Length: 614
Image (cartoon, rainbow, N blue to C red; front, side, top):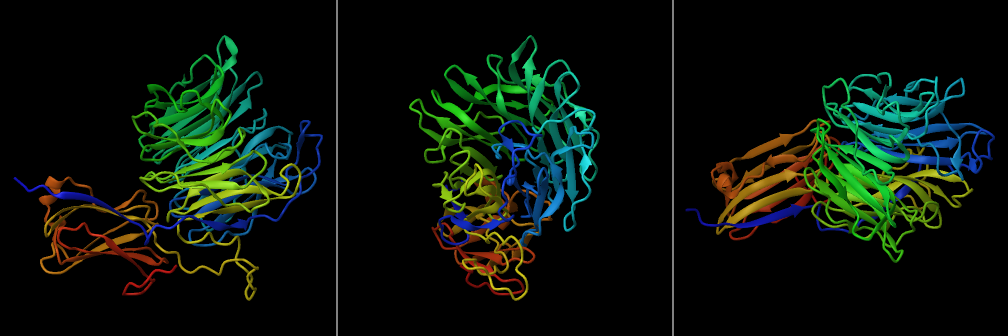
């Protein structure tokens, strides 16, 4: 019979915990004034100076931001800027014209941007064909190259709507969906691009007998697809239910769509996500008596609904607006919404979900907000998350709350400039743990000049690079931070130990959120070490943590000599990646004590660790 051992879990970050620090906002465009009311737009619409600012970041840290901009009377163009991992945003590139009509210059068609694991970018938007009909256009940009000529994903025989949804998997597969008239009704269509291929002709997703719109889509590595939309109920055109379908990886066709939301009332704000096995989560809001419910349902990889409908908001709470959903490849989910109490106080709420289980009780993320607040979510595979909050549709600073893996959401931090309104946020988690965001900024959102900006939170980590390199010899503008050196590897190192007297057993050791092409090398020093060195590496497109020792229970771990250590030995873990300052964690093993790592840094090309830069 083995003697029981004391268990402990050690989570090592890059030194002592520090408060989140706002990254300096980077202007991606100059201020641009709105255009006048156009005869081509509906009453109340006008041409926005800048709108629809959207951000996407891949696991390597490559980023793209896209928006639409007033380029002259009647001409609205889609633009994008791309930032390679560790680099700076390149110049703005014109992708093509879009529809220059937005309600009060704010709410209108928005370009959709995505980036795959290799850094290849896809942007899709609502355009106008030569015959005057609206079409869905898309342009692609290979990593290190420029955007190609846009192609139309929908044909111009009938007009498409601006309810465009786009998702791109890490392997480059993509799906775009929208609604379009077939001459009698509006139907949801989708165009699919296999990894390494081109977009195929659009296919119909919704039935021909009922109007449908508001699509949401998701794609997983390997090609599994999910799509959801709102569709009229047969015999009751006033009730619109959420319908959803999936296409399993390797299949040629989608399964027959099925209704998910209850038939008592119409659903709005449909959202969808998919995990790597092909299981999909769909969420929506719908009125129910005196309040609005936020609900979700799950589809198996074969398209069968499972587990019924899950109500996300608390009893008596009104899910007033701004539903958002994030789903990771490993099956984590995070749903957010603006929830209002019976007394009228509103706040942003967020609820966690896992594969095969209902969503948990939602947590309060923000201080009080207006009922028309807007939010964006980002979720990591280890459970780290961020929520961006625009407290009102048209005014106020952008707030961001961050949650470390295994923790709770911290207080919100303002990240946009004071004295100006930020709206239309988008959000992403960077590989080193930073939170990146993009938004549209205006001193007067209802008419003043606007600009696209990017910023975020340093947790701490490498700062967001400036929008563009300064000309040679140019002095930095007042208030700008000094030029940053190589990025520091700040990936959390997580270890779990069992300790009894002078014996120590390593139950698990891994590096969370490692950068692309990272290597973790573990060395043992001292008498009777069970090994001298072992290492693990990853390629550019690999996902998930870098596992040095996979989790084991005590009984199994004791049977593995390489996991058994004794007091007096030292373990040193070096986490390195090309062009980065490496992270070094040293465990000095002492009897009866759980090892606590000492953190240092390893400059590129150096042999010995040194103190980390502040």
